Image (cartoon, rainbow, N blue to C red; front, side, top):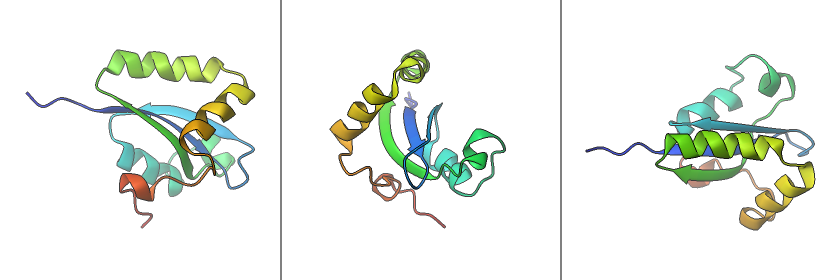
Length: 101
């Protein structure tokens, strides 16, 4: 049986003033869509193109619950979570094989 992988992710704009939290089962496709402004709305409006946090899970229900949980957090708590994995707030796209083409 082929097990699916789900990702809760956080993206930001160039100066990290705005964050977007999402969930997907295809991280490469989703990040590509964000980086190329293929999705109208919040991420396009605020130029959200940098992947700054990723949390994988095999459980879709856990991913949905985690996304909702992170969205309720205060900004300071989100910052600490990001910095625990990505202290320099680097764009992690390349680390996940998501080359910007």
